[in-house]
Length: 309
Ligand SMILES: Nc1ncnc2c1ncn2[C@@H]1O[C@H](COP(=O)(O)OP(=O)(O)O)[C@@H](O)[C@H]1O
Ligand SMILES: [Mg+2]
Image (cartoon, protein in one colour):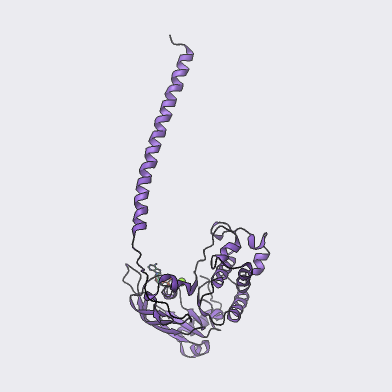
């Protein structure tokens, strides 16, 4: 006959031993997962980037962009996304780009900071082939607001300052004023020190876009690309931004992709991209006379058929 104390002791010991064994099994599991993960990580770190640095000295910065017979298809994909594009964008020009969804507008501008390499032809910035630039030199000249703006979970001020970490508060504020963001930032609880939630979820789409625009303006480069980055702004705010942009940055080359005729009609020239091709590039007035596709876009929006992407 065993005493109850002895039985309790035995149970306690057994459960302690079991616990220990279970911990050991868990450690083994973590270790083997860790080994597998580190192997995959190493694979990524060891990958040679497809975009290799060029070696030439960068020419004087002006803001000219030229496409010469550019054709492009995404790596591993044979269907061309751009076909034989030729365009000469002058320093300080305001070029708008319009075209239906999937026509290749984003792909067109992505070739300028060399996110991808052309399949045929060449893209020149200030006269030099982008493949000859050191990537750092090339990308210093270009600011780019993505179609979907990314914000980080830090303050609004720091989110804008990513464009130029050494900028003073006055410069940050000036960029925000131009981007039409100053007003709503000041109405936030802590103004410029308001924290942004993960992914910018605490802000509306238009507010996120304006912060992303301010970030690009702060970078002060000679070419600024806005990929559909005013789509969530109302027409009045967009007009105020466009006027401020033209006034504050007259010498900067501005390439603006937009869906609305009202966003593109004041540009120096409008490039119409349709089905991978640059079908026309001219002023609004001339396109209204000569370009059927542009007339179609115009009339569909006049009838109230305007749609948001
Ligand atoms: N990363 C990618 N890989 C492969 N195909 C892509 C990629 N991005 C876009 N595409 C394709 O390229 C075409 C043009 O896309 P895009 O340049 O984004 O058009 P837009 O900006 O005019 O809407 C589309 O048919 C799209 O499916
Ligand atoms: Mg796009």
